[in-house]
Image 1 (spheres, rainbow, N blue to C red):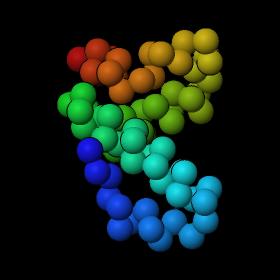
Image 2 (image 1 turned 90 degrees about the vertical axis):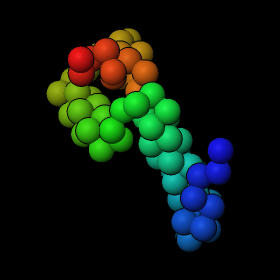
Image 3 (image 1 turned 60 degrees about the horizontal axis):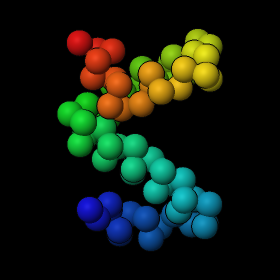
Image 4 (image 1 turned 135 degrees about the horizontal axis):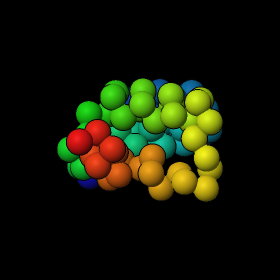
Length: 70
């Protein structure tokens, strides 16, 4: 699967490119699992900010989000 090659060219720095790749991977994983990426990111970041335990991180993965939201 090709993830927006042209956008990644303008990352500006190696770490910026790696960050872009991480975000693009999360977005594509959401799409593959039938999850709306913006809603997933909003809810996941809110859960982390509200103190979601690190030992239960599997609950925040895109493939588990479908179960959370239904």
